Image (cartoon, rainbow, N blue to C red):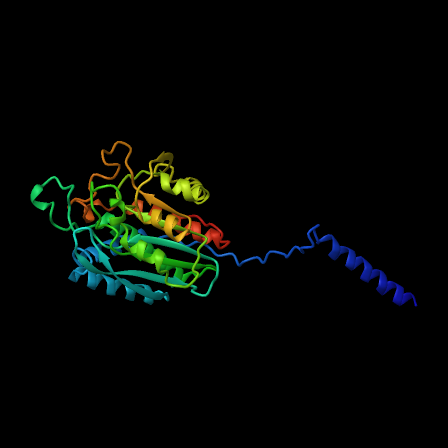
Length: 338
């Protein structure tokens, strides 16, 4: 009899404990499952620099050109070698000039079945003209595009390499937009839609039905020396929490000279399309000098945008910050970055 009473009391106590976990709505608190801690790897600036050089070795990457075709195959093979599932999303870019260029978004998926996902992106095409060049004879010629946007692609390639070696408990989609940089300068109202054709296409034709991501980070012109990355206007409007989180992390890591708290006006870039059409909060890390006439770097849309512009310290800083962001999102533990 005493044993029965003893067991009954234990049952009542246990029932009381369980009842304490129920709130007034009848919902039961479910303990959060702790993810395994993962060390954040060190971003290799030399590897990223090589990836910029390699892109330039194919020549200009204007959609449909020989250099564009060769570079695409190299990018696809590179991501596959890192263990990513790669999707080539082909489309026809209707350029404002009336030309129709065969184009392709490249989507490299890490942990493709994981529901919790983030997007890291950059455009991989290079502009078909250099209208800002000091030399009038060069303004109708395609530019090399080392910084715009070979630098962003190079950083994402290195991140892909590290994701293959040091997996995390989260899905990461590295998306390289095509036909971003072929828009009309100084056009009529509404001409902004002539830019970012690849991200526009993806936003209306996502590679997976009902695809969603927690947030995204877009990289554009992230390789030059002494950059200034302000809190860009569109990013702050649609994804302020993400922007503040990334900037705080960057400053904690010692990159206060690059990631500044100044706010800048909104710009038309791939992140704007992803926010407004795809409905995914995305920020833009983009170099905007303080005293620039056109708000961009002096080599923007010129033939000076070549390998000499690229600085390894900048590649390291941006790459390490983005790496730390996604690894911390996956409950990673920060280590010292040499």
